[in-house]
Structures are given as C-alpha cells and as structure tokens.
Length: 132
Image (cartoon, rainbow, N blue to C red; front, side, top):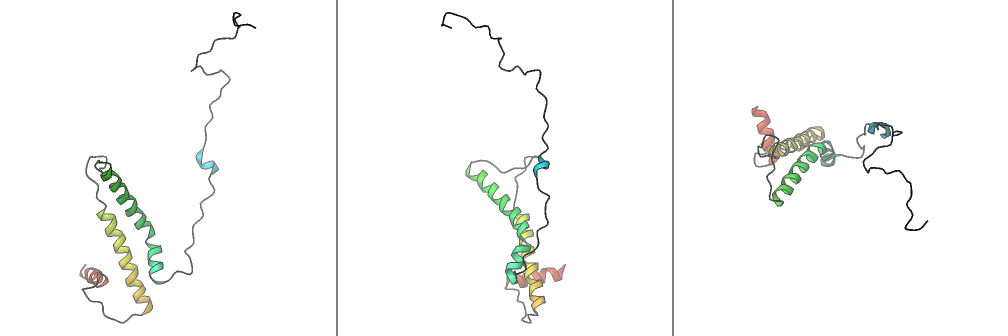
C-alpha cells in the first residue's frame, strides 16, 4: 500500500465507547484485610505508657497544627466550611489533659507520696480537677 492508496478502516470518534463495554464496579473494601485490634505493647511503663495512651489525641492536634501552618506559609487562611478560622487550641487542651491525667494515675499506681505543688503543671492540673 502506498501513500496514495486509502484504507477502508471505519472511522471512530475518540470518545465513542464500544457496545461490548460493561460497567465494572469496584468495591474498595474487598481488597482490605480485616482490621485487627492492636494490642497495647506490654513493655511500656511510666510516661511511655501515658504517651502511648494519648497518641490519638496528639495525632489529631499534630494534623490540625500542620494544616494550619501549611495554610499560613501559603498565605491562606485556615477556615472551616462556614468561613470561621479554625483553632487547634481545643485539640491541644484535650491532649494536654490526657497527658496530665495519665501522669497523675501513674503516680497513684506507683504510690508516690510527695505532695504536688501548684507551681508544677501536674499540681495545677490536680488542683483544677479538685475544684470542678
């Protein structure tokens, strides 16, 4: 076939879908393994255990703070759907309270007899809890 000869191929439009195509629905959960409940590591004690127990609250705060910082660096505002500026302070307070609560419970468990002072962060937390 030379360049002068034409071929008799059927013309097809680019967006035309062949009649034999069938719709395939993919279930994303079909490929997921069943979720196993993670067990708490047995070798954690003291503050390491407190940190482990508060990890989800810390992760939520870290994500919020990182997103807010990224928006700030990009010259944007970090706002919710209603247009209000998002504050990560409430997430930080939840995380901080989790840490203090865990530290206090650890002191009770170990039987630490020393008196907490209001100058210490844990002492302030305990005093606030007693006031409520």
